[in-house]
Amino acid sequence: MNTPTLKQRIAYDLGRELPAEFHEWVVEDLCGHGAMERYLIRFVGPVIPFFILILLFPGPMTLKLGLIVMMIVPLIIFTIALSWVWRRYRLVQHGLDPDLADKQKCSPRDRERYNLRYHH
Image (cartoon, rainbow, N blue to C red; front, side):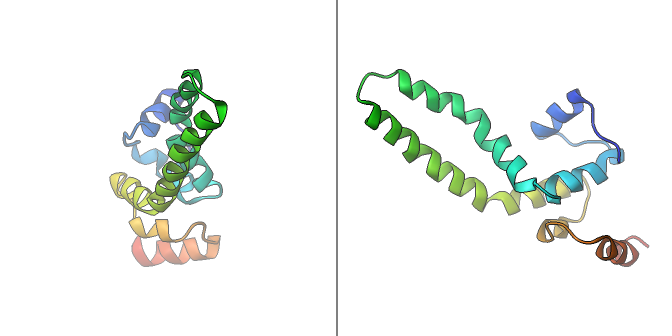
């Protein structure tokens, strides 16, 4: 399986499409083992520094931590809720079957049946 270069990976993480030679990697990234963890890191990770800035405001620490929790909990909930939509969108963007997002990880036998059925 071909893997993208660092420059291609950054472009992919920012929403760009990868060339067809990386489609197997894209399917593994979006639907394979650890896909949800990677998705959460991509969406929640960049926001963490802004939450840390709240700690610089004056006031009691409990208030600051409460503000951070009140912002991060809905962010995580909505991120998880929209993960299926995001995975389907990214698969369609790369010209792949969006139904792959429904199957987190299928067995090699299932993959072979899928290929026989849809890739004549």
